[in-house]
Each structure stands twice: as C-alpha cells, then as structure tokens.
Length: 453
Image 1 (cartoon, rainbow, N blue to C red):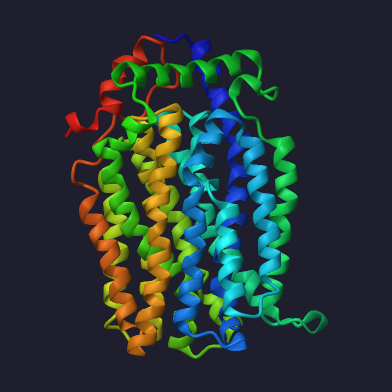
Image 2 (image 1 turned 120 degrees about the horizontal axis):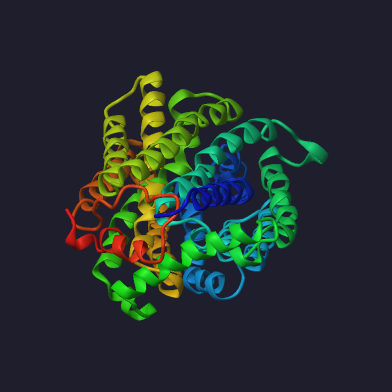
C-alpha cells in the first residue's frame, strides 16, 4: 500500500499539473473554436453583402473539414513522437494567419479556399491535445481533464457571441464589421502560438516546474499504465485501426459531429430568421447554448469519473439533444425555440469528454495517437456533410423544418449506437497512487471493455 508520503506527493503533483496545464490548453482551444465558428456570426451579414446563397454558405462551412481531415493522423503521431509544444505552436500561428486573410474575401471561390486552408492549418490540434493530456493525466483523471479542456468549446460560443455582437456593429476605416470579426479574432492565436513554444512542456520528466519526486511520481504512474496496456494487448498502429472498438467509435462520433457542426454553423442564422432580430442581438441569444454546455460538460465528465461509467454518460446527452432538435421542427414560439436550442446545444456538449476518455482505456502511445486522429478525421467528415446538408435543405424547401429533423436524427442515431458494446463501465477512480503491481491488476477492468458489463 502507498505510504502517506506517497499520497501527499501524488496529490501535490496532480494539483500542480492541473493548475499549470489545464487553463492554458483551455485558452488554446477557446481561441481555436472561436476562429473555427466565427463564420457562423460573420454570416449574419456576410452572405447578404457578398450575395451568397444558403447552399454556398453551407458548402463553404463544410469545406473546412475537407482540409482538416487530411492531416489529422500524421499530426497526432507527430505530437506523440516529436513535440506537442512545437507542433501546437505551428498550428496556432498558421491558423491565425489564415483567419486574418479570410477577412479579405470577395467571391465564393475565395471563400472556399480560405475555409479549406483554415482546415489544413488547424488539422490535428484537437487529437494532438488529447494525446498530450495522456502524457500527464492518468485514466482515473482523464475525463475531468478532457472535460475542462473541452469546456472551451461552449465557452467559445459565448465569447464568440459577445465579440460578434460588438464587431458586427462597427465599420472601422470603412470596412464591414463581419470582416473585422476575422481580422481581430485571427490575432490572438498568432500571439498565443509564440507563447506556447516557451510555456508548454512535452513530457513530465522535462517539467522543471515540478520537484524531482513529483516528476518521478507522474512519470511512474503514466508509465505503469502504458506497461499495463502493453501486457494486456500491445498492438501496432495498423492493428489498432482494425480493432472493432475503434471502428465502432467512429460511427457515433461521425453522426454526432454531423449534427453538432450543422447546428454550430447555423444557430445564429436560425435565431435571426426565427426572431427577425438584427444580427448583433441574434448573436447575443446564441450565447445561451454555450453557457448550458459548459455546465453539462464539466458535470458529466466529473460524474463519469466518479462512477466509472462511460457508455450512458455519452449516450444520454446525445439523446436529449436529439429530442430537443426533433421538437424544434414542430415549434414556432420564439421563446420555446430558444429554450429547445439551449437544451439541445447544451446537452450536446456534455458527451464529448466522456467519449474521448474511452479510447485511452485500451490504446497507448503511437497507436492511441493515430487512432485519435483516425476517429477525429472520420468524425469530421460529418462536419463537411452537416453544414452542407442544412444549407441544401433550406435552399430546397425554403424552411428550417427539414434542417431541424436532420440534426435531431443524427443525434438520436448516435445515442443508439454508443451503448452497443463500444464501451462499458470502467473501474471507479483509481487511488491517488498505485504501484507497478497494482496497475496491471486493474488493467483488466480498465481496458478490456468487451469482457465487462
């Protein structure tokens, strides 16, 4: 059994790692998602100014993900084998530059190119950070860590709403406010990318901000988990790609992201058209789903770690989001629409941290990095399909009913697939410190999902 000194070292090390890394990666992802989704707010004026149809806007929104999926897998492996610090800095600086240049587009072709290259620039940021967190947080802490990181997504919708509400109303130097959204919001990632080079630490053994005993404790805990997984199943990247659990994880993630990206890029437009409000006020209403999303993400991740259950903590939020969007197709009262969008958007965010804690239970090192990239790549093809399909449906039918039904169906289907032997209950939170012997003994509960129910 660990001594009290071991427990104290573990508690102190975990706290210092969390305080040092989680706020920073939260800010990184917040800026990332603000720049990815700022198009949804810019479109409150952009399409009218440039003469874009809903189909052009939907296609341009989705083209981002074509560039994004191309470099997901190699980028995630680079983080594992080379340097998260340098790769993340490169990503942030390049996507900031492309975002700024998006503020100068004038044609549909330029719009498509800007979105494609933004996807290329941002590719592998998300799976790279997930890989990076596995270098610092044990399985028992991982859903909370990922939940804190992923809370940046709903937070970004709030921040983006507030900034867009302000920027849409300005005309500095005769330049339209929607253009300033891209220009102003492209500067922070460039600056933060430079800071990242000096602030992040790639591996625990390199962390000068931890004492030697704390570095040894973190390295020992993470190393012991990796060895436990190798004893149970040590697979190559290609073997991991063929693992049925990896394949099954792709399907609900693809469906969920099809719905999520469709709603993310269209919610401000939905609100504006249903309410008749001007763009800046519609942008403010769009902050509500993000506020609920922050709470649902953190609470769901915390409760999943506490109980050790993963499947239903993933499926239930998706089901609630799906039902909310299906009800939207029959709702015409504006306040009820806002309530359903808030519930649907907020609950949708809740599944992310738990979902991404599942692959880490049976994969490690390069195989895990490659599979994070693969799952995210396949999932984000839904990011191309979702916004494009909504634009097509609205253009074709002249109504948003079909769009709501499409988004709701994606969420409901995803929620039905998740419980089908993809993941199972995992062992409740590990003790603060485990010996090399204890971790492999726990491995059968933590990793072999298909044998536990």
